[in-house]
Image 1 (tube, rainbow, N blue to C red):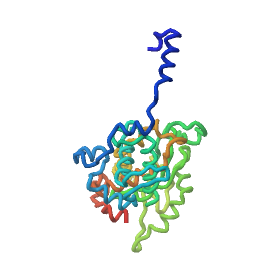
Image 2: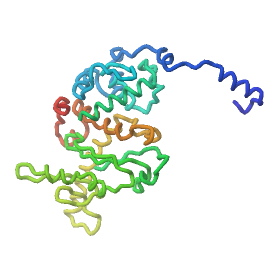
Image 3: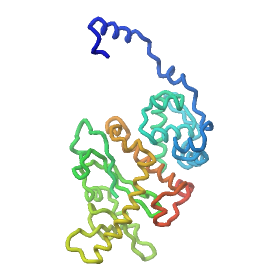
Length: 307
């Protein structure tokens, strides 16, 4: 539209725009009434927040979220509303301004509350890589040649009950899985905890990890005998079931899969993923998942997980 304006018209348009009063954050948020979570149907509530309404109070209690959140900058809300703000933000790649009409709060208010609740959750408490927006500095450190993208890597372990029981990271995208294993000291912990009633247990990782006593990997696809081929085939189907568990984090909280908004210098990228894993575990405790069904293993209850 600006292409059809002459210089005088363009100058007038700019001056008019500069002269218009702008709404303050307070006035903007005051246009909408404060959210009442009881107005949603059960289906709407689950779609917006991924959890059922009756689970919220137990989650807040188990995660250590107080009934009243009062911050130094005078932002305040209830614990249940704070959890709802965080969940709604992570469920879908919304902008904060898109959520003002839903919660009746300003963008800055919701951003501060969300960050605070996220910190509470983290404190309570397969190598995975998550794509991020290309950093403005040190880009080469975060680029994974194997994945062909800029990313952060995490080292996590998923059990047959569908629970992610270990999450280590973050590591820069260029780091190889074997290097991450050494840096994380995870294998030392495995050696210490992998003997149970005189039986040795182990975990299974992909081919990027080194073969060790307590860490099995696929046989290299070179001159395999029949048993080795059968082992790789069987474990491939098991690994797929495990990937369902890791994939659930992104399926439930799609904001993490929106690469353009995973800005390392502007967003709490690592903290968001850690929070999403904890919330995904809570979801598995309450509603199960495909991995637990595949292995026919019952996840723990929410109270057992958060105790």
